[in-house]
Length: 409
Image (cartoon, rainbow, N blue to C red; front, side, top):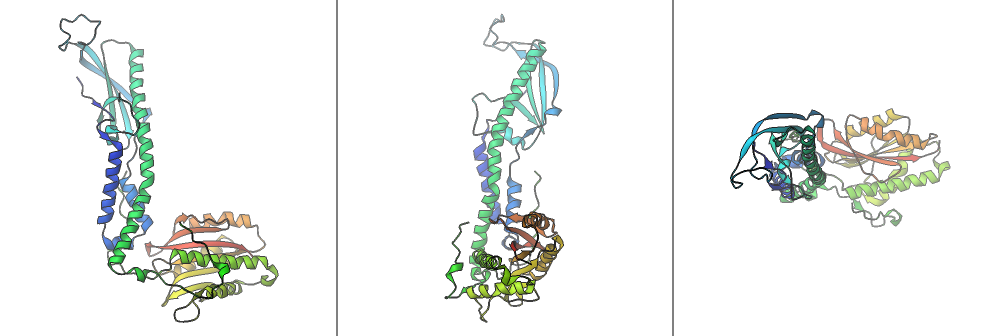
């Protein structure tokens, strides 16, 4: 005799996924507040999504084996047999043939009904990481046995395909769901501490700022270890909002377009002189809190917004001299960027080189840098955006936008 369960029938897979999502959200709500505030939102979202994703089952077909053993088969329901009483079990000698199907993934999935199903699911038994599919026979017709086992295996594979489709869709949403809850909790924690105002570095726009630069508003399983975070109390730091960051970059891009359209006026300028061309239009839009200028410089090529002795926005101007010059510029930015949420930019000026070739090389240069974390979407044919980690604290993320412009020699 053998014990088999009706597979894909005990639980509703949708309900299991919703319960898993609810548990993830509960853990986010219970995550230590200071660690939540001190850890990269993207790193935390990745951690929770990885922890709570449900791994679909993959059958390892090239390792399937078969076995057989003696058994007793109840033939009381066989109308072709002469049995005195068909209402009582009548056992005869037979053979139990079992297909041992190894698999990878969450074994509980075999007990869950996917969104697509039939009313005659297969039967089987899960033992560790092996699914056992058994049939009993009183004959020795090998072809018939093989056909019956194949039908049973194909039925299991069909159900697993439906379950995998549901799980793939569910897993794909987890990171966004986690991110939304993390961001919502961060905002609540900051409001609870009365710190929201401390986190934004206010840029006061001049009332007479040129309207030609106005930018339209854009609405934009192994259990993993939590990302490392400081155990000390979270300390708020100044930052500029993304909307202001985008507006600054828009002013820079429009100024660069002016340079590209007036080649003779800017021919032969070095990086320092090119930098100066951006300070005037930037300061025509933003007014400093203690001086007339918000944007200033330190050193030869950088454009800065400072809060005290540290910068919340840094831009470097570099003439393209190959990958090494860009990598060095990133190192320089990282040396200056000490706040948790520093926004940065590198303005690359291309002279007498094929622009397409330069643009093709930049993503690989960014990805190969030791502080690179991930690329970000940036809708520009001549611009790129990524997230860098500070060398001494990977949770302090720096946004870098690289803008490439054509400037004549």
